[in-house]
Image (cartoon, rainbow, N blue to C red):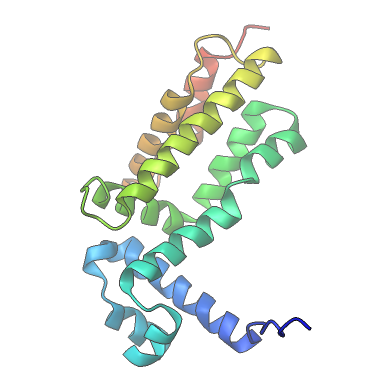
Length: 193
C-alpha cells in the first residue's frame, strides 16, 4: 500500500502566493538586496518564523518569485503566435501584456541588473534565462523567416536586447511609445509587400 501523499491546504497555497506577491512587489521597488525578509513578513502580516515556514531563506523566496514568473510565461509567446498566426501581432500582444504588468517588468529589470554580479543569488538564473530567451527568439525568427514574415536581417539576440532596452525607457518615461519603436524595428526586418 502506497503512503498517502499529503496535498497542500488551500489556505497554505493562498498564503504562499500572498508571500510571493509581496516579495515580487518589494523586490521590484527596492531590489533583492534592498528588501529584507522582515519587510516581506510585515507586508503579509506574518512573523519571521511564519515566513520562514514557507520560505526557509531569502534565496528560496527569490527562487520562488522567479519560478512563478517562468511557470506562467515560458510557453505564452509561442502559444500567442500560434493563435494569431502572425509574428507582429504576437509581438504586439507580448508588449501589451508587459505594459499591463509594469511591476513585473520593473522586477526583472531590477533583478537582471543586480544579477550581473556573479555573487548575486540570481546570477545563474539570469544567465540561463537570457540564454533561453535568445534561443527562443532565434527559433521564432527562423520559423518566421521560413514563413516569409521576416527577412534574413532579423536576429533573435538583437530582438531580446531591443525589447529589454525599450522596456527600460518605457519604465523611466511611461509616455514613451514602446509599440511605435518596436514597429519601427519590425518595419526594417519585414519583407516589402
